Image (cartoon, rainbow over all chains, first blue to last red; front, side, top):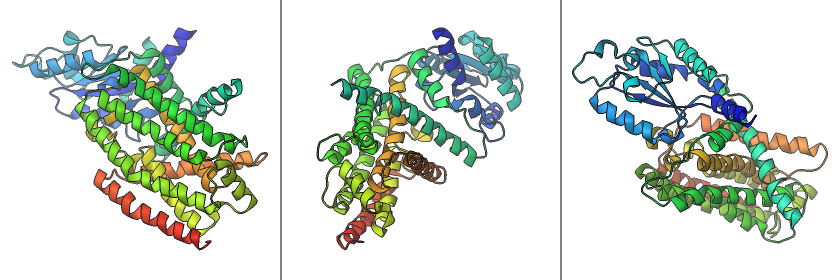
Amino acid sequence: MTVGFKEYCFKKSLWVFHFGGASCNNCDIEILDCLTPRHDLERFGILLVGSIRHADVLLVNGSINRRDRERLLELYNQAPKPLLVVAIGACGCTGGIFAEGNTFAGPVDKIIPVDAYIPGCPPKPEAIIAGIVRLTSKK
Amino acid sequence: MAVNLFYFFIFPGLLFMAVVGGLLSWFDRKITARVQFRKGPPLLQPFYDFFKLLLVKETILPKHGSPFVFLLSPLIAVFGATMAGVFILLPLFGINTGFRGDMLVIFYLLTLPSFSYILGSLASGNPLAAVGGSREMKLIISYELTFMLIIAAIIMKSGQHFDLDTVIATQKSGTPFIGSISGVLLFIAAVFCIQAKLALVPFDMPEAEAELASGIYIEYSGTPYAMIKLAKYIMLFILPAFIIALLMNGMSPGTGIIWAVLKIIGVVLLLTLIRNTNPRVKIKQASSFFFIWMNLIVVIAIVLIAFGL
C-alpha cells in the first residue's frame, strides 16, 4: 500500500530538468511547446524546474559531443535519485546525422541509462506527451 | 500542555494549516493556469509534490558548506510559520490566547521563515544561492518597515490595543477597519507586503527561476525541500488570514465562516492576479517601491487615523 502511494505521488508530480546538448534547437522549441497553453503539461503535474536538485526527469536532446559528455555525467551524478532519463529527438536517441562526426561522444544511452526514447527530428509535442505518459505507466 | 500541543500540531496548527495551505496553493496555480488559458493541475497536486519530495526523493547534502545549518533551516521555517499561524488563527477562531502584545510576537515569528531561507542558502555554499540570499536580505530590509508601520497603524486605530483578540473585537463592535479611507490605504500596502513576504512574482528576485535557477532553494532536494514547500503552503494561508484579522473583521461563527473563507480566497485571488500581470522588478526598484511609496501610503493612513478617518 505504502509503496503504491509513493509511486503514485512520484508519477503524478514529475519535475523536468532540460539538458540541451549540441542541439539545433528544434527539439528545445518542441519541448517548450509542451508547456505552452495548447499542450499544457502542468495538468499532469509536470513542471520545468531550474535546478537539477529538484528534478525527477532529465530530458536530454541534441547530439552529445565530448564536452557535453562531462557535463551530462556531472548533472546525472548531482541529481537526487530516483531519476528518469528521457532521450529526445534523433540525435539524443541514436546520434542522427552526427553519429559519425569527429566530436560525437555517443548517443545518450552510452553515457547514462535511459528510461525512454522519443525519436523524431524534431518529435511533435504530441509525441513527447505520449512518451511521457508511456514513461509514467511503465513502472 | 496537551491542549497546547493539540493547538500546535492538529488544529489550528500544523496539520490544518498544511491542508488549507495546500488547497490555497492549488487555487493559486489553477488561477495562474486559467489566466494563461491553460487547464491547470489537479486538485491534490500540491500534496503529490509534497509527498513525492518527502517520501521518494533522495536528500543530497552540499559538499562545501555546513550540513547542520542547511538541514536545520527548513525546520526553523516550518516552526516559525506554524507558530505565527497558531497565534493568528486562535484569535480568529475566537479562542483567547490570553497574553497581551501578541501582534508583535506574530510580526517577529513571520520573519522567521525568510531568515531561515537566508541561513539555508548561505549554508549551502552555492554562489547562486548566495546571490539569492543577499537579495532576500535586501527584500526583508525593504518591506519590514512598511509591515511594522501597518501593524502600528492598526494598533493606533483600535485604540492602543496590542492584542489581536481585542483588534478583532473592536472591529466586530464597530465597522471593519477596511471600511474607512485609512483602512483601504493600509490594505493596499499590506497586500504588497504579503506579496514580498511570499516572494511572489513582482518581488521574486530571491528565487528568480530564470536567472538564478530558483536561487535560495537551488541546493535543496528531498525532505528539506518538502519542508520548505510546507512552510510556503502555510505562509500562503496565514498571511491572508492575518490581513483578514487585522482589517476585515476576522471571522464570526455560523455563516461568518463562509464569509471568512470567501475573504481569504479573495485576498489570495488578488495576490495571484498581481503575480500574473506583473514582471519581476529589480531589487533596487523593489526597495524604492517600499521605502518611498508604500511607506508614504502607510504614513498618510496613520495621519488620517489621527484625524479619526
